[in-house]
Image (cartoon, rainbow, N blue to C red; front, side, top):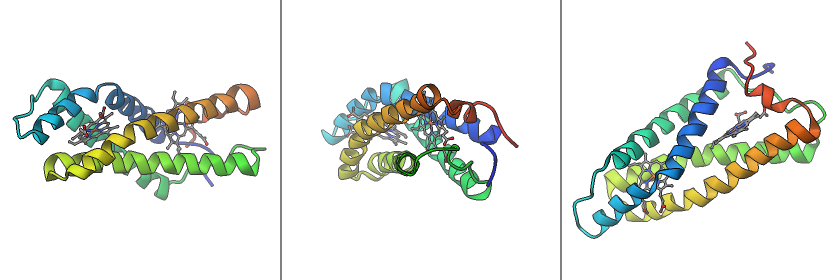
Length: 161
Ligand code: HEM
Ligand code: HEM
């Protein structure tokens, strides 16, 4: 079992996190462009629409990289002294985030380039799901840091080779 996250894993965590927050905040133009497509009109390809497609695709690539590193290099075990219930919750939460980080861009790409309208609806559902999971994730990280005082945040700040 590795002692901690590597420099690359940490950089990927924060880069992907920031890009996802960007998508959540600036997704509206893309919604407007999609409405136009559904009405048979030419979508207004603003910078934010292109940005949504490019940033969303980049997220998919970075998450695949992240998962590959997770498989090959591994990740540190649960923090010492963590209860079995918290450990399970952390595990489920992280995998749910990974599932959404993969499924969201794929449904978006298939809707936009493949014209599969139902996947646009599924894609739209990812918004509340991601927001809820991220809020729980951040709350859990702060609970560890400030209540359990186990230094969990440092694991995502200081690389261990
Ligand atoms: C202020 C925002 C955030 C904070 C403070 C934070 C903090 C952390 C910390 C401390 C860990 C390490 C947990 C451990 O060592 O067991 C972690 C892992 C993780 N974070 Fe975040 N995070 C944030 C945002 C995000 C966002 C936006 C996402 C994705 C949507 C995300 C996805 C993940 C995932 C999937 C892991 C598991 C990594 C692994 O072991 O494979 N995080 N986060
Ligand atoms: C992790 C990456 C992504 C996230 C977090 C994300 C998030 C969002 C959000 C928040 C919206 C607005 C939903 C609304 O307010 O109704 C949206 C709409 C949309 N996105 Fe993405 N997106 C991502 C990647 C992509 C990619 C790569 C594409 C490919 C072109 C894409 C295509 C679309 C389409 C077609 C819509 C309109 C869907 C509708 O209104 O039903 N997205 N996305």
